[in-house]
Length: 287
Image 1 (cartoon, rainbow, N blue to C red):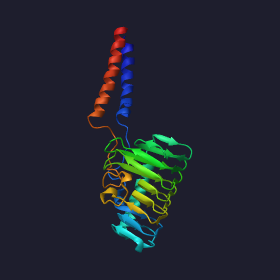
Image 2: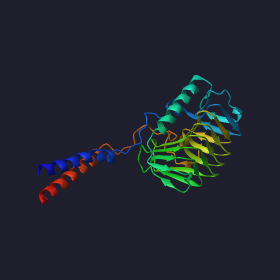
Image 3: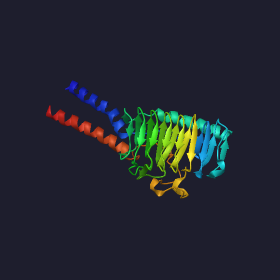
């Protein structure tokens, strides 16, 4: 009987880590994942180029490059930072964010080039060993979780077809959407995009593409052509409401860990342990 008890107790102990995993699925991010880069809507490294009328809500900067071309055609609600200390710190913070996101463990891994168009995804970390694309509409369902976070780790390039849409539903002001691109990102003509692109190389926005979020290039250029990029989105009404923004964060999240509500996790853990103990008791009586 003593050996039986020890065996059952050992099984209960082994279930505790499992209960912890079930109770605390998380996408753990720093307090403010983007740091000072959160103030920017567009941040380039080598240069920022523009063609045609472009609207930017948020700061515009470049570092360590020294040029922003066709600035006269940009309507800027924010501050221009041309190779100054603010832009330098923002680039440093963006690099820190890029590395922090890249270190997250993926819940879903795509081993081949993947088109996400037509899919609906839940909050989580999605890794792509190669390239990722969006043709049509990609829906990100935050499931009414105020701290929902979507992270896309893309091993090569990110591209969208013309008139594609990334739509966030059932979210809130704390919803975070991050695109960690290990090469370059290109948004096709008239794309309606949601989230923060942090590309190791460059970001290119084709004619009339819009972003609710940010375009950040760590080593290359941000290239624009008659675009709208906003880190405040629906707060000032400059972007199409189809983007589904729910506040002034620009899908930068609020830095919270994506876990169940405080009262839910302990209750679930306790329930698992009670079930395990009851199972041991019933087996003990049967013996």
